[in-house]
Image 1 (cartoon, helix red, strand yellow):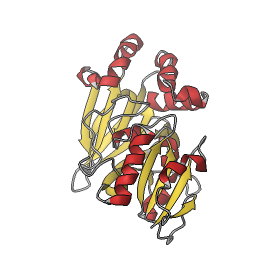
Image 2 (cartoon, helix red, strand yellow):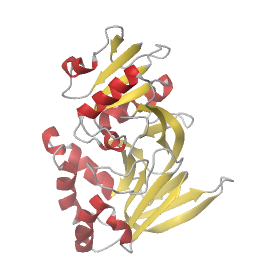
Image 3 (cartoon, one colour):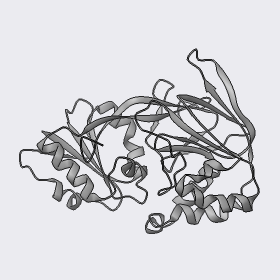
Image 4 (tube, helix red, strand yellow):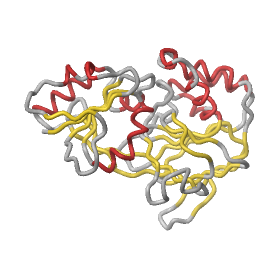
Length: 299
């Protein structure tokens, strides 16, 4: 078997040693090239590291094992890989039985007016594994990315959100959904604080922005938070960690395969904690786009 290892910030080949349990496995360090015939890729890092390699991983069609060593590990958490030992158990299972591979969905983002120099062509969308967002969410992600790495991994998102909540004003935003005949209809047209498009339930280090999201249903879970008083928003913020924000009147929640986002002026889109592009965009889902290793075949 041929395997590859990708190391995010703070990781090196010493992190790989516990996984080198079979001398017959041929290892490649770094992202394999197309046609390399690598069967499985081990990625040591968090959501941002995964995001930066997603497009190539999809093209490789290799299975992916995430080893959660980043400051944000929401995607790994969604896979049941909360600790390095969980990833090691999944690796042992794969080497011995090979019955814990599962195909999951990925989100897609297609800029609608970006130049070819700024983004991939329309037929080659930008993939994301967890959650994409616009509005307050993007501003918080930008601020969190400026914090020291150790702080980002210990509540950095919440720290960045607290001051931003009282400074961020709702923005004009239109969100459209498409039916099976590709006809667009407007679902939200109001001053909006945040719109999140989720493939997994959590982001930002465990915030359950989309508590009903599943990675294998072919749908995005969309959470839209309309304008509200900053103090009410500050009181609501902790409830997001438990998914209770869906009870708030200003929160809309829906499931769909495709959405289109238009704003009064171009706004930043962040996905998996990384800047992607600016609005307007189309956000969708590609079912079964990525094969991943799970802790057990029952997951």
